[in-house]
Length: 448
Image (cartoon, rainbow, N blue to C red; front, side):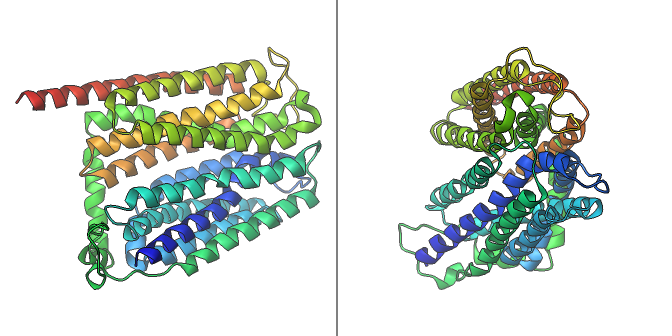
């Protein structure tokens, strides 16, 4: 039984690796692809598409648990994978209506996919293996930022324009990758109910009892969803969530910037010459390295220390502000909004590839600082209400990511960076206030 659970976790991780190799690469290059299309009938925007995805994703999270409870996590993930593959396929022969229609569908699919993933991972873990299994899954998932972007670098390096043939080759490859990930979910195996397996003392007790597993599939799924929604509304009124919402909102803004906007800016910088398009792929890889380094150091080493939690968030703010200042000096102001594939404005410094990639690393590192500590403080403060608390986090983060993607095609780079600086400083300050409140509460409990 233990071997079957490990098998399921590995297959789950590989499925997400394939699907998000396709989707992450697509998100990183799609605005550049859209601008390079030689198609007068296509009027879509990559920024708007990503905004729709995150907007629909935020609201679909409220319904996703009910869907997973009714049809089960395996088939939910398979169905969601089909929606992801459909979105990738649109870029082979783009049309405006299908582009935006599949954006809506993938927003729904993303909510179901991640809800099902969490449920399935817990089903295949017990109290002694949950940390190991989560680590295995996330290690495989983080690799999704490497392979697709590496291909983009080798294929686009030296190209001034992206031809239709190159676009079709890339997205056929990404489609095949996404389909492989989707099909891998069919290879997942059902584990026996806990009462039918013999557990030794080292394995501990399963995290989900059979009664709870069957209850979630019963007709009471809708009632459970209503109850959780009421809990979410109650938590939204608490001082802790209201304060942390600023930090959550900032995480959404910088998520949109590093995942879709910054790569486009690099690819549009005229001074990078023929290397500009290939640098989009390298930038995505370096962002991923920053995420992996930050997640490993701050997520594992500092997860149980309240003092270090504030220190990590402060470090994340400083790292991001340094990156924003260097980007302001190094990247042309019109890079996010230029209609053609190259910029017309000149930055303060002569654009440097080394500085651009350093900023990519700093963006990934800072993002991991904020996200690991938000997960940490929510898990600590709302240990008994973790699901609603994390649902609120994803909701606020996704809403602001959607808003950022919508304005990214209209605001100059300076204004986008200024918005992130203001909200980043406010979010960090609010995080510190929450830590102070929690520490004061703990001290009072110890006195009495």
